[in-house]
Length: 306
Image (cartoon, one colour):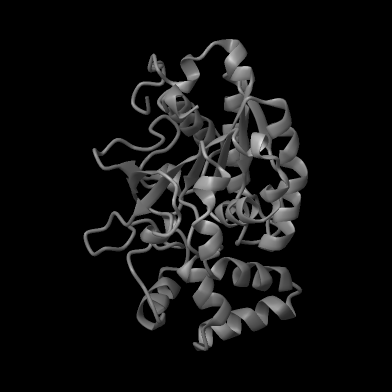
C-alpha cells in the first residue's frame, strides 16, 4: 500500500463499509516541538495532514490538542479531557502517536484511562506508535541531566532566555513513562488492544543515521559520554521505541531504516516510507507526508484488529 497508493487490501480497515468506518475513531496525539518555539511546527503539520486524510477516508477522526512543550502531566490532562467523547461515540478506537506523544499516551493509559468504564476501555483496539518515546529518550535524558559542559550550558541558556518549559519537557521525556506494575496490568485493563510499534533503526553503515537531523556534533558527544547508549534514530534509541518486556500486550513491530524524522526513512525492503511526498536529501517534513503514511496504514492494517 506504500508503493501503490491505489491499492486497498480487501481485509483492511479502509475496505470496511462506510458505516463501520464512521464508527471507528482515529485519535491522533502529536509529539513535542523541541526546536525554535517561534518557528514552524512541521511535526504537527504532518500529523494534521494524517488527520485530514483519515477524515477523507471516512473515519471518525480526532486531533488531540496538546502543549507542544508541555510536560507529560499537563498533556495527560489534555488528552483525558478530549478523548472520552471518542470512546463514547464510536465502536472502536485507534490511538496514533508520534515521538513524545507516546509518553502522553502511555501515562494516559496507566492513569487517566482508569476513569473509563470497562466497556469503554474494551473499545481501544490499536495503539499505533510512530517512532515513539515508548521507553524514554536518551537524548532528552542527557540534555536534562548530564553534567557535561554543553548540556549544562544549554539548560542555563534555555532558562535565561525564558524557555524553562523546554527544560521541564526534556526532564519529563528523559525517563520511561511506564510503571512496571501498571504495565503488567495493561492486557487486563484493555483486553482488545494490540500495540503496533514503528521503530526507526539507524541507516548508516557505521550504525548512525545518515541524515543531519540536528547537531551531529552534539549527538557524538552524547554517544561518547552518556551512561547508557545503543543505536539511536537521532533522538530515541531504536529499542526504546518498543514496549518494555513486562508490558503484557501483543505487539507488532515494523522496522524502518533512517532517522527520527520517520517519513524520510525506508522500510527494510528499500521502499521509502513516504515515496510520493519525500525524496532523498530533503530532510524537512511536509504536511502531505502524514496523509500519505496514514492512508497506507489504513489500507493495510487488517480489520481483524477490531
